[in-house]
Amino acid sequence: MLGAPPGGPRAPEASPPAAHEFQKLHLTAAHELQKLHLMLAVKQHGFGGREQLSLCELPRPTPKEGFVLVRVAAVSIHAGDHHMLTGRPYLTRLIGLNEIPGMDFSGVVEEVGPGLARFAAGDEVFGTTDTTGGAFAEYVSVAAKNIVRKPATVSWEEAACLPTSGMTALQALRLGSPVRAGQRVLINGASSGVGTFAVQLAKSMGAHVTGVCSTQNVEMVRSLGADVVIDYRTESVEAGASAESGRYDKILDVAGRYGWRPLLKPRGSLVAVALPESECIPCVLCSIVCSPGIVCSSKKAHAFMQASTPWTPTLPNPNPKPNPNH
Ligand SMILES: NC(=O)c1ccc[n+]([C@@H]2O[C@H](COP(=O)([O-])OP(=O)(O)OC[C@H]3O[C@@H](n4cnc5c(N)ncnc54)[C@H](OP(=O)(O)O)[C@@H]3O)[C@@H](O)[C@H]2O)c1
Image 1 (spheres, rainbow, N blue to C red):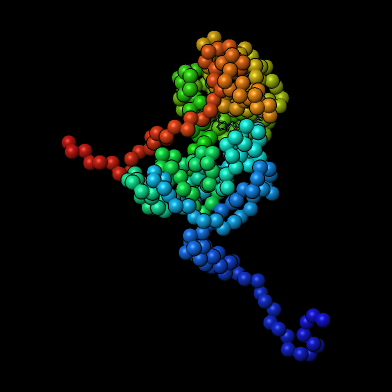
Image 2 (image 1 turned 30 degrees about the vertical axis):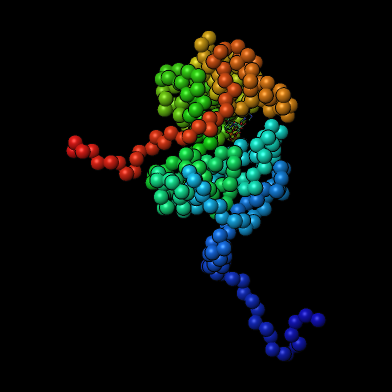
């Protein structure tokens, strides 16, 4: 039988711990884990859905030569993370399963690997691990060439959203014939991670921008600066384009479809950031390799893969050397 006998002394009821006690417990646990060189991390057990993910204690990585250890402040999730979790399209599985998923992050440098002078403990940075993953954790070890300093005016969250989607948009707009002021640019998938950066970057390059998205995102894409927005749920891209009476100097396809040729100017260029989805590996390989012939007969059509070359930091140097002439 449960409970105290009637009339007997009552055991005091345990009250739920207050929020600050939880916080204290969490800090104590984090401190203990640190002493053991452990960290909390998301672990991926296989390809599939969220059931493949669990929160685990894993060894904290040690940065090797050319690497830094970053204490993660914020991470972002993009379509690439979804491909790496689901293993779809199947071609993704050639990369292999990462124990810890996650690519794009921002945070503070905790430790610097041997022989690296460019960064020091305490630097605020952001970057990407690319497809090697590891960012969904308290600490990530990342190649120094894959990070840059975070400007103080940019929040942790904003910085973590930038690397893959922002770089993809910038590289795609520069690929082939870079966008010039006054040119007409069409972005299919303008409301996507890549597309939202592409709309803003193309506008800042002086282009006339047409964005394609669904009804719910029309106002958002317009607010990013698009001159014309085509709602693909209510009209076809072809109809929207002909209503604007124009062809385009550059088409960026972030959503993946065929049949762009009639919408390109004779010397226009197409960059296919995403190809139409297919599980047929030979078909995907073939469409990447042969894209100038398949996607469009123009020699300036590209199936685009984000370059994994080192970042070119274009941010202002926070510690400029004094000019001896002054
Ligand atoms: N090649 C590379 O190096 C590289 C790098 C990064 C990303 N990618 C690829 O680029 C693609 C987009 O990535 P992301 O992270 O930007 O995607 P995301 O944020 O998940 O967005 C997907 C977008 O597709 C749009 N969309 C769906 N159906 C459409 C249609 N019929 N017409 C026009 N737009 C349509 C959706 O717009 P609505 O919500 O408005 O319908 C949504 O905004 C993915 O396939 C990704 O793998 C490639």
